[in-house]
Length: 141
Image 1 (cartoon, rainbow, N blue to C red):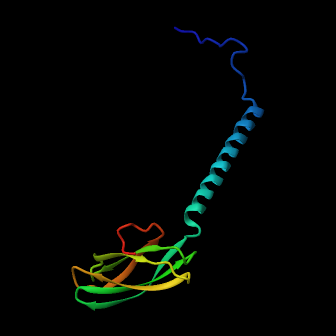
Image 2 (image 1 turned 135 degrees about the vertical axis):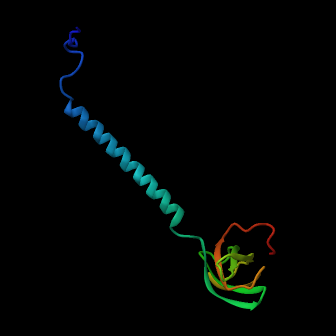
């Protein structure tokens, strides 16, 4: 048979120290709050005010292999060049044509642009993928 041994006195505390527990909980709460503020700030910077937006204004089916998509481009600064991407879908919802185009600087912050899109099948609907200020070098200027 084995006997239960008791630890030496003074080596292990009998009860947890409430002041230490409060300090650990308070420090953890502060860390969580700081992380929350940092995450909120990053999210605000990323998703708040977009320098450029492109909204669908309309589309027109020109023929069995072409549609035109009209985009309203809104920029914070009208003198800023922009590139936009529009696409066309068939009746099944599959993308059948896409076009990226250059929007030159203008004195107005809001302009409307209509661009034709060639398709591989008869088009059904046009849409805007988006617009941005990073204009690729290969676009006509």
